[in-house]
Image: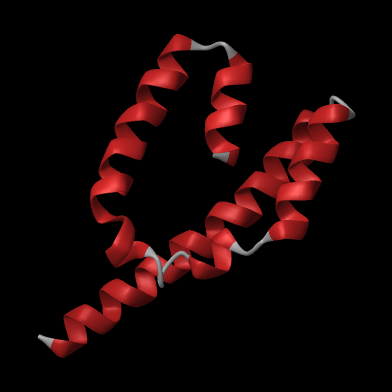
Length: 88
């Protein structure tokens, strides 16, 4: 919901279409990705940092905080894929 709110507030149709495509894929894999994305989904301080930066109109700080959030998820997915590959 957090990212959806940001996309909606951005009022950018191209970004909204890209996000909707990503979300559709994520929704199909939600259960499988839940463990891999756990650290990202619990990054409450980072989400607050994004909100605070947006409110302060500090785009650089917002982007940095958002990158920190998504980096957690990326690492989780990479670890899950490595474990799956090792198990084959």
